[in-house]
Image (tube, rainbow, N blue to C red):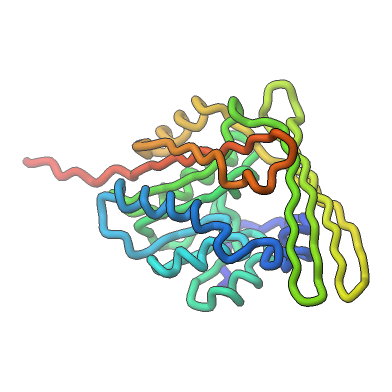
Length: 267
């Protein structure tokens, strides 16, 4: 894993991305991301104005997406969590990984595609979201595609989820509760309860995550202000159906954007 000189990176305290990062490979099946990535690949093929060879993945996590992305592109990943990056590198040794903050990372290189799956939710302030979109724009080649997957405030609802997995002598169950924190729907809290049994030793962990919610109009405004042309919005309503309890509904929206090509005017 390569290191870079960045603004000082504040280590997050989330167990899910550090001490418990190893649980993701047990909870997630190999094909859990297949349908989602199929949507991304189709969007890239349809809307990119240039030939796509290299991809930047901001908020890459433990590298589950990259296991599929690397079949099609040369991949570079960025994440803020050491625990996630350690796992990502072990799964994808051919991928270049950097520990950095997506708000201000400077790779001194541009890419044909930039993808930000729902890790963008950790931008809880408008200013942070603007910085991240500026980072994506800076690192994208003209004619290239940006894919951002997020919740929209108007569409978001409280939900409960359950995830389970087992490997060898380890069994894991995770309960997740999402609840909106304010009447204006500007953020929600995801509370995760981990039940982990390893070699007969049973432990319980609790983890809390604060996630930002922005209205659709704000998204459109910020993307346009960053310089992108918004070519399509794709709803993904059923990716997590099998994990949602009760009559919940978990809606994600993909913004498909293109960085305008450089125009050459005749003199």
